[in-house]
Length: 300
Image 1 (spheres, rainbow, N blue to C red):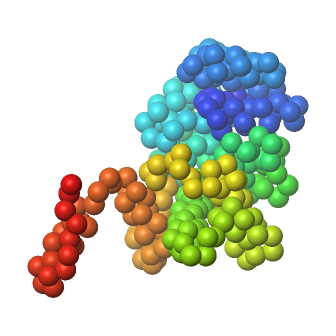
Image 2 (image 1 turned 45 degrees about the vertical axis):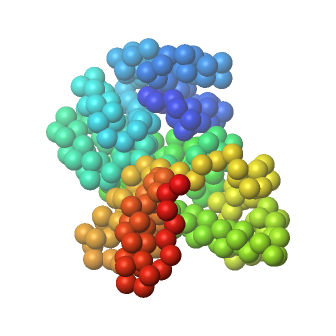
């Protein structure tokens, strides 16, 4: 199959290399050309512009976009649409908001161009293990490209979820669930670490939990690896970003009147991690001192 891709960061590069290993012809574009040129050693055909990318693909064309969500992806999709022809397909494989997918699909439909949203999970391990794919789009657009999806995924790791938007919607909720799982692990390990008289070994606990326990998971395996490398995680700051999907999941829960306290609190804990000192905690301390005469700690 002839495959085009723009955006060859960690995920995009993994996708391109996995397709090449499966025998596909892949034309790749990246804003920093040197990144694409590195993958050329594995068989990638480098395109130095979106115009060149589209020109190198036979019709009907299929171009994957693996870029950060928002304006940069919007601009790339619309630029590609201006170069492509009726019957061609654009696949957004980044972490786009499903509402943006539905808007873009309507715009592209007027031009006769197909639009597919591909929720992609697997991170930097996707090249070797495969990417879990959650795909949204009309069946007539998805079916001709199914081999490309199947070859990206591990066995049973690809699902055509439904119409446009559904793939990124499912991936959004997937990431919300991920937030909650990670927060529960993090809190559990902190509870154990603060029990100092037991002298618990976090690495050994993570390792034993990964063998037969009901809480075993790939996330726990990653925690096990991290504790093996740095038992106290002394080299890390407890600063946690969020890339948007948790917020969108919570907004969807609000819109659909679904209680989601675990996911919501896990997102708020990420906000908490970014504050060197909480003003809210200072307010609490002041009130406790005021009504009960409780001791407070002063800034030194």
